[in-house]
Amino acid sequence: MAYRNDVDALATRASALGLEVQTKSEEVKRAAALLYEARERAKLPVLDNLAADRHEQLMGAVATVPAHEVKGHVGLQEQTK
Image 1 (tube, one colour):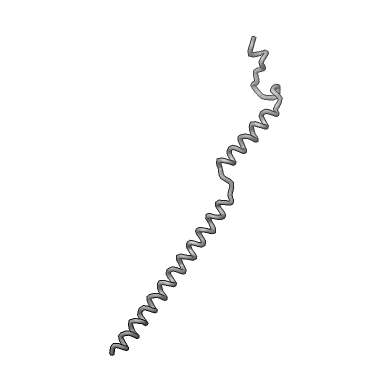
Image 2: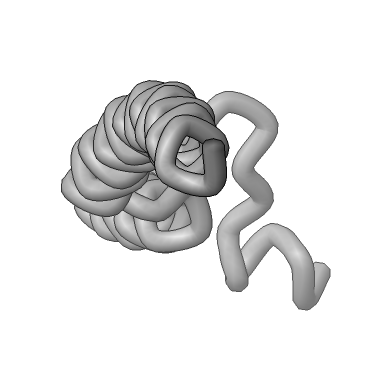
Protein backbone atom coordinates (compact mmCIF):
# COMPACT_ATOMS: atom_id res chain seq x y z
CA MET A 1 0.00 0.00 0.00
CA ALA A 2 2.99 2.32 0.16
CA TYR A 3 2.63 2.82 -3.57
CA ARG A 4 -0.95 4.13 -3.30
CA ASN A 5 0.02 6.54 -0.50
CA ASP A 6 2.86 7.88 -2.65
CA VAL A 7 0.48 8.42 -5.58
CA ASP A 8 -2.05 10.16 -3.33
CA ALA A 9 0.70 12.35 -1.88
CA LEU A 10 1.94 13.29 -5.35
CA ALA A 11 -1.60 14.04 -6.52
CA THR A 12 -2.16 16.27 -3.51
CA ARG A 13 1.17 18.02 -4.10
CA ALA A 14 0.36 18.57 -7.78
CA SER A 15 -3.00 20.05 -6.84
CA ALA A 16 -1.42 22.35 -4.27
CA LEU A 17 1.19 23.49 -6.79
CA GLY A 18 -1.55 24.19 -9.33
CA LEU A 19 -3.31 26.46 -6.84
CA GLU A 20 -0.02 28.16 -6.03
CA VAL A 21 0.64 28.78 -9.72
CA GLN A 22 -2.83 30.29 -10.11
CA THR A 23 -2.31 32.56 -7.10
CA LYS A 24 1.14 33.65 -8.28
CA SER A 25 -0.20 34.29 -11.79
CA GLU A 26 -2.83 36.63 -10.36
CA GLU A 27 -0.12 38.40 -8.33
CA VAL A 28 1.99 38.81 -11.46
CA LYS A 29 -0.98 40.34 -13.31
CA ARG A 30 -1.63 42.79 -10.47
CA ALA A 31 2.06 43.72 -10.27
CA ALA A 32 2.20 44.22 -14.05
CA ALA A 33 -0.84 46.50 -13.88
CA LEU A 34 0.74 48.54 -11.07
CA LEU A 35 3.97 48.78 -13.04
CA TYR A 36 2.09 49.97 -16.13
CA GLU A 37 0.27 52.64 -14.09
CA ALA A 38 3.53 53.78 -12.48
CA ARG A 39 5.22 54.09 -15.87
CA GLU A 40 2.27 56.08 -17.21
CA ARG A 41 2.40 58.41 -14.19
CA ALA A 42 6.14 58.83 -14.69
CA LYS A 43 5.42 60.22 -18.17
CA LEU A 44 3.31 63.01 -16.68
CA PRO A 45 4.97 66.35 -15.94
CA VAL A 46 5.93 67.10 -12.37
CA LEU A 47 3.71 69.75 -10.79
CA ASP A 48 6.64 71.68 -9.32
CA ASN A 49 8.10 72.05 -12.80
CA LEU A 50 4.74 73.19 -14.12
CA ALA A 51 4.45 75.79 -11.39
CA ALA A 52 7.98 77.07 -12.06
CA ASP A 53 7.34 77.19 -15.81
CA ARG A 54 4.06 79.01 -15.28
CA HIS A 55 5.77 81.46 -12.92
CA GLU A 56 8.42 82.18 -15.55
CA GLN A 57 5.72 82.65 -18.17
CA LEU A 58 3.85 85.08 -15.95
CA MET A 59 6.98 86.98 -15.01
CA GLY A 60 7.92 87.25 -18.66
CA ALA A 61 4.42 88.52 -19.46
CA VAL A 62 4.57 91.08 -16.65
CA ALA A 63 7.95 92.29 -17.81
CA THR A 64 6.58 92.95 -21.30
CA VAL A 65 3.65 95.10 -20.12
CA PRO A 66 4.50 98.81 -20.31
CA ALA A 67 4.50 100.45 -16.89
CA HIS A 68 1.85 103.02 -17.88
CA GLU A 69 -0.60 100.17 -18.64
CA VAL A 70 -0.36 98.62 -15.19
CA LYS A 71 -3.31 99.73 -13.04
CA GLY A 72 -2.20 101.54 -9.90
CA HIS A 73 1.38 101.87 -11.14
CA VAL A 74 3.37 104.64 -9.53
CA GLY A 75 6.23 105.73 -11.73
CA LEU A 76 9.72 106.54 -10.46
CA GLN A 77 9.22 110.28 -10.91
CA GLU A 78 5.93 110.21 -8.98
CA GLN A 79 7.54 108.26 -6.13
CA THR A 80 10.30 110.83 -5.61
CA LYS A 81 7.92 113.80 -5.26
